[in-house]
Image 1 (cartoon, one colour):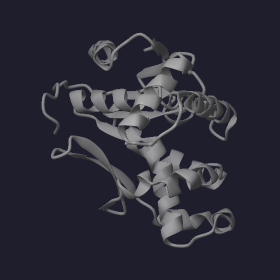
Image 2 (cartoon, helix red, strand yellow; image 1 turned 90 degrees about the vertical axis):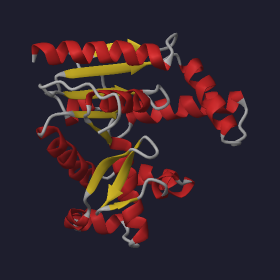
Image 3 (cartoon, rainbow, N blue to C red; image 1 turned 135 degrees about the horizontal axis):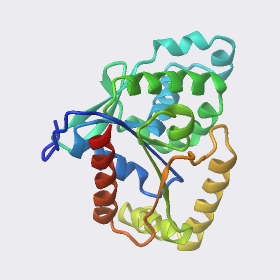
Image 4 (cartoon, rainbow, N blue to C red; image 1 turned 120 degrees about the vertical axis):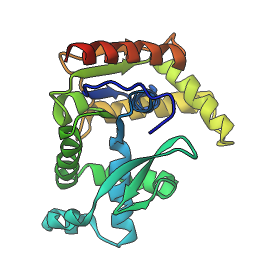
Length: 234
């Protein structure tokens, strides 16, 4: 269990939705560590499927004609105390580094567009949620994946602030892009996420968390307060 975990008897599910680069993954990991919950990175699950298909030379058309192939895939997440990170496992083997490559990033969009893949992963994600004590982030977690989640957070951030944060992050990784290029990249991402196979949707009962003018520490405190409040009355 992560250090400084808060031990609370009752467990709930927490769904966090929002655009890419709004910080929802960072917040989800923080809440999972603080509450001793399991963090489920829905995006990493799609990347894991993409990695599996590429590694085994399975064409997308094969999945469409025989979706049973996907049943050979088991995805899980485990907290690694050494690097303070929730790692993605595929059939019992960590693939965290393998799914973060440019090749997977370029291919995962095609994989996630398949209804067969989406249905398969939603089923797995909902199985995680049955045990409670799950924090999951994505674009439609509060509406399609965990519609009964006790706490739903819809994160928003001014697009220009998101672009600035992404620009700074890329600079730290020596990935050179101009700020204007990053702004355009964010705009294109938003258009895809708003109109894709699993479009970004705010659940009617979700709480909006606008972190445009908030630090990571501030948004973490707010979200943890919400979580403890919901747990107390669940």
